[in-house]
Length: 258
Image (cartoon, rainbow, N blue to C red; front, side, top):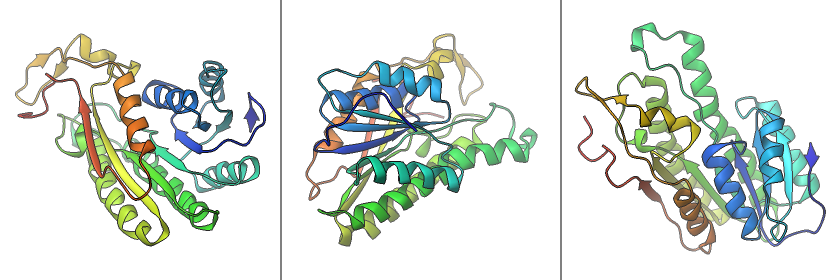
């Protein structure tokens, strides 16, 4: 566990998983520059350190924590570091995600299926579980959990069974956390993101397969709009909650997809 910046205990503490690139990096930096101290979690230390190196000198501190969110022991170590370094957690953004090859469902291996489930579903469960324990214990108690759903939590792409199944499941997990967290001042919402301009969506600029069998270039939006949405959700008092929010490129094929 490595810290790239010191010290001072900030007003609010946030944990962002998948913080080494893309949406996770953009949201972590937005939170940090707005005053949060941000715990940066992800599998690879190098990209996390790169994110930390982009932090605003005027913002909160950062803590780099290499973590495999699909492994209980790794998540436990992550939260032990949060307890030790900060003593509390105000915001968890369950963002880490992965995908399987876009091949026919019958050709997917068990290992490919299991890898997506571990990161996209088991990971958010394990992190939420630990976050809830800490948020219940801390003084003042409570906090906020934001889960990264996806447009695929509503409508699948062709050849996306593992990803779509886990993102539909995230919606159920979000509702359960929201319900069970009420009595403990824990709010939970979900952000469903469509075609943010990151490395993961670069392939859309050359065309992706559509439900009718055609290939189409899909529009993308600046990832900063996702970060701005996260800041809005995170900035609400705990007696208010964005239960579900969809942010997407205006003309991407979602309404009417398929």
